Length: 388
Image (cartoon, rainbow, N blue to C red):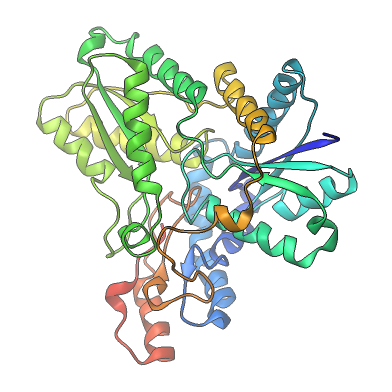
């Protein structure tokens, strides 16, 4: 087969406090995060929001040590994956490509082209597909492929989502069971799955399969766990006036408290690495909400990180991808409903969100509404959702 490469895709995060401002600017410059009717607004608006957000965001990162651990964990996952693949008889070079911070996806592509890789497996570290996570990275890669003749000669295959992978499900079940078994009455512990949210319009209008994949993944994890515990699935990080996937995590926690639930294990179902949403939003913000609601035994299952069974899951995915027909970027980015992603359509006007930025609140509604009003002359206030 020749030299094999594996490109791990992730969002990225600021390594230190000084990185927070540029990281936010990069993120808000992505049309998949903020969608506006005119592209010339993108960068000025990104600069404005990043400038307004930087201090609050830095305070949140201070609570988890002064920066995101995402790069360190992702690189450790890559090293463990390389070793596991070698044990399975498949040598491979591993590359890490982050969407909004170093090492950027473009940097990873530059490295692998220098290494003369014969076949590349593109593996997003998002178990479930969403147009705002895997989809954004796939569209960036598609653009890079179109612009680089050398890349066009490279054989590659994409793994679009992998939430059904048996060893992934087993790793998640193991991590949940470890937390449940540390409680006084394990069978009475309520399992609380918290997934990152997306605007409801992504699912209903753009055909994003994310909600369906999250719901099926939750079911499969519970089947693998095979315990009698009750469970709830909710969506975290909702902001702004637009409707997001429901139920919302904060509301679901309050409802469970009102029902008399005392013991819960929170499961960050859409995350495979610790980062701001697990360490700050769940461990600090949602813990406070739960305790105020009367849930005094609040535990959280850790993200898989470098759990051996999880790393075996990634290795199995790579081996299977190498044995199957190639799956192209154009196929991976195709939604069930044919919605043109560029330029943004009318339904896309407004602001959406992605991981690593749901860590506070931002009062941007009036500013965005004013800009939209000035450039369009239409009342689009109700269409705007806010990033935190």
